[in-house]
Amino acid sequence: MHSKTIAELGAAMQAGEFSSVELTRHFIERIERLNGDLNALITPTPDQALAEAEAADRVIRSGQAGPLTGIPLVQKDIFCTQGVKTSCGSRMLDSFISPYDATVVERLKQAGTVSLGKANMDEFAMGSSNETSYYGPVRNPWDQNRVPGGSSGGSAAAVAARIAVAGTGTDTGGSIRQPAALCGITGLKPTYGRVSRFGMIAFASSLDQAGPMTRSAEDAAMLLQAMAGFDSRDSTCADQPVPDYSATLNDSLRGLKIGLPREYFDAGLDSAVAASIDGAIGLYKQLGAEVVDISLPNTALAVPTYYVVAPAECSSNLSRFDGVRFGYRCEDPKDLEDLYKRSRGEGFGAEVKRRILIGTYALSAGYYDAYYLKAQKTRHLISDDFKRAFETVDVIMGPTTPTTAFALGEKTDDPVTMYLNDIYTIAANLAGLPGISIPVQPVNGLPVGLQIIGNYFTEGKLLNVAHRLQAETDWHLQTAEGFA
Ligand code: GLN
Image (cartoon, rainbow, N blue to C red; front, side, top):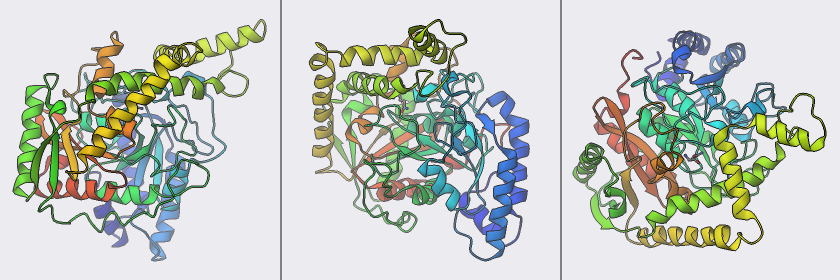
């Protein structure tokens, strides 16, 4: 059961082959057996899952089922879930029970999905390896000595290990696409504003975007369909109609113009990963696509720009966690200052503190122009690179990450090396563009992700381009040993 796609599971449940309760029990049993080693879930919610599955079965019996009715998934622990702990991977929110559901959670519930629990993540979504979580690192199902990527590493590992059919993620600088690549699954970061951020704990508000993490592009289309759309509770949410993402999956790719930015195939790219990406691009040529060399000349500015903008916004967003208004409170504070200092000192981990310090510095009077304002300007240059590129190409392709999954602990002492893991994903966030990562030919038994970036609101095109490759290949169906 756990190796089937959303479409297959939906059809089987509607044909009465098994019920959502049976399917959910199967996944609960897998979580009990496999999650201990992986640590992909912070809070499993089996009782809630079974209650939701029973409700889904009633809907199925009444003939009212939609494509997601009764499908078990996991929610990244950044999404507020009513009555269930919402930790954001931090000690700061270890005892926070949300009084309401995030819009993403609410919409997926309305679509009839079953939540198996809350997925592990880097603390406040800051990280590329899931090692900054207060709840400990997640292990990569393909090699448990390696990281799953981050910050949505719990969701990625859960889907890869088939302990959930799908998961939700958020992507501020690559946190859906990078763990999807390292775990061999499909992950889509939509256009900024395509999916509501209401109830999604804010990291860097001008970059954060939620999206689906699934086995296939076909599954991602179904999940995005339920997640996307206007929400008056998020003022940056786009008031644009949501197209039927499943309807265009099989569109022909004849004449599709693929841009290959030379900066994405630089010396920092592992040669075996490059070969795997080249192989996938060769298949696109066979499908009728045309390949064009392009340049995104300001690519080298993306990481430094991001590491001013994101910390600046996080320092502001995280100021509310002070032990008074929100979050962990220290024991026996001497006075108010001691309360603030120790609550934040004890509640936040090292990476979060580093970001708050950098961001506060960049925003301070006297430095604002030199750092934050400058970063906003270079951000503009990066967006303009893409604007020019999309005048001549339909999509941009390249690797999602420079290497396959690295070893646990390998980069924890060197933040800059860790930050460079997102070198190919960050620019899309700075420009607000959609991007998808799909598995291609593995290297030494480890997954490799092909990244496809599109123009604004072209999620349908990205899913179509991803699906056509998946229809010809089986990389997205491969499962790590021990989890098949
Ligand atoms: N790895 C990047 C960071 O640490 C991106 C994180 C994300 O997309 N949430 O900030």
